Length: 218
Image (cartoon, rainbow, N blue to C red; front, side):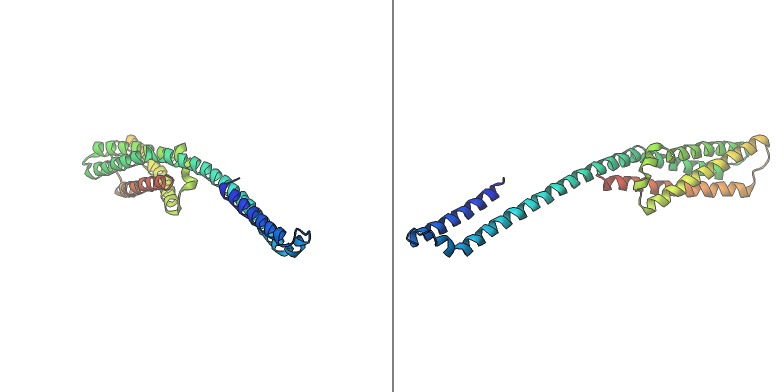
């Protein structure tokens, strides 16, 4: 029992005792004083009963809310762990791969002969494979149900684009291995370059999404 309840009961009891004492002394110790003050006594008892009932209901609601809050905290804790595992270290790795992709694009643009172009596409293939593997990581996939709309769109774009870029870089590398010295098709070259550049632009945005999501669950 809380201190406020004790005080309330004490006050009600004292009030009833006071009224009873006044009635007893003023009625010549006759029994019919209860009849004379029954309305007042009943009112006081009704107020006391109502207070006890409302207080009990309030306590039950507080306990229910407390249990709900505890369950919510446990649920958020699991989500927080998912987000943290996805954000670290992958946000930094994604930023690093964006720089690597940018360097590969520079290598492709500056390739002056078949061999330098061949080396550039080999590097592009390896980096595209690394990017694809990041978005297939179990820790990232486990957190994707917590992504917002924009983050989900970014994730889907990068997942599909890195797979497609890897396939195209692999095909280009195989073609160059099979036909050494043959000039690369400008159309194929531009398609791969544009796709790699789109990936390079989107990766830092997704890394920011990961970091912001971690802050939301702190």
